[in-house]
Image (cartoon, rainbow, N blue to C red; front, side, top):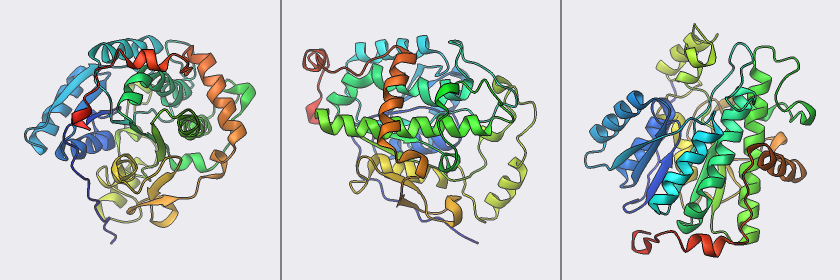
Length: 330
């Protein structure tokens, strides 16, 4: 029976952390550990009731934690823009951003309110837009941005003439993998652009392995009336500590990538167990679909066109003048 080694997180007092998809599961575990290390936590949530329950759970497990909710639906670019306006208006530099939220394999092809295939629109484009809208705050906080991928990203490829999976959707797994490949390429390009432009942002990627989370549960919002096939087996293996992880251990790679001084930009972190299904966090070689810088540059450009956001930082200095820099909190 395997048991995952824990990691040590340094003091994060005075740091502001934003974690998407933290109303349950892996994201909740990540947010709780960051709060326990002293970080102030912002939870952008779609369901306020679940968000309030998550905030209460964090305060229970990390007494004294400062946790607040914001509204966010990553499947709506309007909602993403509204959150950006709100947080930029508050003027707080962001030190940690964990892009953890996602949807997985709706049994039938579905679309976002903006007309994008649901997985590509939520997992990838929604987060691209979020990073763009928060860019001045991320630059001001010299943020660590960690983007959550999946073992599914090790196979497959971007189908450039069918980004919205209009052909041969099937059970949605290929479209899910493409959304994660696209997101990984974007996150790696973000780090390259940051280094070239001296933005001060460190961007890396992680994957959680396999764990019994709500991604595979019955979810009306993605048209799944019953738990996905394999959910019960994954739960049984997890309970016995065999091969796969738990919701808590699956968050360790992202936590390591987001907080460890040894986790650098442009790197990939995941579990060290068999097939990357579970285990302790370690640095991995990039999956083959994530290695092409040409693909990364192309997805960077195409994603901005689709979301109508821009990472043009020509006026970055003027923009950052509007941000209240809490230098003593860094």
